[in-house]
Length: 341
Length: 193
Figure: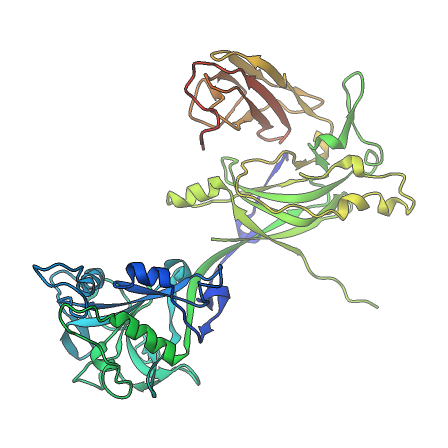
């Protein structure tokens, strides 16, 4: 043996896939109760969407965007501009944006459970880096408020485990329903219960998007008013943000598949007892290299790093020990190297 | 009576650039072997005059804190190996100062002190400075010997060619300083990875 030692796939390599959930908000929090906006962002692009922070960006330099909220209307209502007139028609842009993303071609209206032909929606979309892989179905709860009114929203993945069967561009799709996660994801009102207004919305865990139905939010118990006035900068997204602020509670977790492989590195007693480290040797005038005094008769070396290689001797992963560990003829070393990707 | 310590050392590994590159191209890592290194250890700190006796000779080394693993690695500077290679080394010219652009340098390795005859892996740390004549875009080659060619660069730079025995893991370092070519538009510091 030289420098490399083969790993025995059956004994030295163990692979497992772990499902890891974690809080999605800044600092790893799984729930937050306060919400802030940036006046700079709101002034510049607030007519399209509102970025929401956990901390106040005006006095906390580390504050980062947690999610954004927006309002979309198929005709651009609630924003400035109409067809053939000046104005960005921001709500039409938002409607088209998410309609194009989520719905199949030639779909021009949204469907919330039993109600189709819906012309508008609120959007809550998480910061991409916060999602990592996806939002955990059954792992979020959003409270909305409007004056003294409150509604607690979750998804219905606990009862409709495989999601809706509607043909969307992203699967799974779950309904947003009233309920709470406390005590085990209890659904208060099923998605199909209100056939007049439809469900509270739709949830797409893989893209981190919640689409909320303004028609359902506009009636009891929340009665959140949404302006559909033409050519008017109504800032419904601000209304939605204020409703989140009044709700004072947003719990959400993300979920990731972590592919872990453990490599058991075994340095047997008779192996790895010499080194190519130059400081291990002295060189005489005649050029003969000798092990330094003290290690000549009782060879000892130290392990500081482990390299993992493929058959082409390419170093693919590297692990470092926190401190050097002694290796000699009378000592064996077993190092468990964990590689996540 | 004390309890036996049944713990093993567990460490987290990180992917190197090569590992990431393979994954990003849809490949699989196919890790099949390992090597151990004693990088960062200075054996001259092994103190055979330590007053507390033989058990304390290596105290200075054993108590040091090691730096974290970094991705920007493709080889170790030293390896642990078997006792039959103790004292073996690679013989070669290790310093080429004042090299003019266009000059070709043959790096020929001689196995010394019991080192086996084998192929060697040659790593160039900056191929803007010198390139393998047989594979100009490669940063590493594995064969018996190589020829590198000094590049036209401005300003001058020193490149390091690390040499590793493919099986023995014996290593050596060749330093090549290529002089400034005043009319050259090539900056030796541009990204070459």
